[in-house]
Length: 135
Image (cartoon, rainbow, N blue to C red):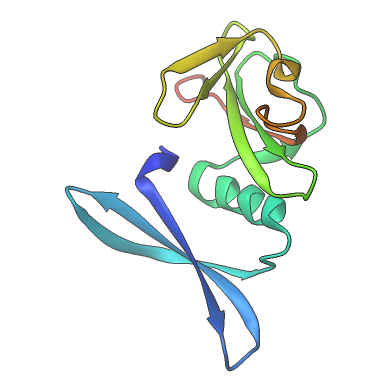
């Protein structure tokens, strides 16, 4: 879903704030989707949380535990607070991740990808939404 959304940070000179423009990409063309804003480019985590909320209907939650009927996403950040990775929880409670151009991987828990380089840092936020088709 999110691989088809392109985000572009734009500074709005009139108001002195940053806006995030979203473009949906398909068939080799980009179609303007809307604006998320204002956002803080120095708080990419908040920007990603907002993007998941708008594009996917996700809301922040307290736990990465499996909840029947819900799909969860975990967002990782590095030591500088920059977003480095995201993982999605599968229906059986395991997690799946796309490692760049490499294959998708499955991991039993979120700690499998935490730590210093070459890992992805730490989980900073877990989001959830109703699992598509569950209700």
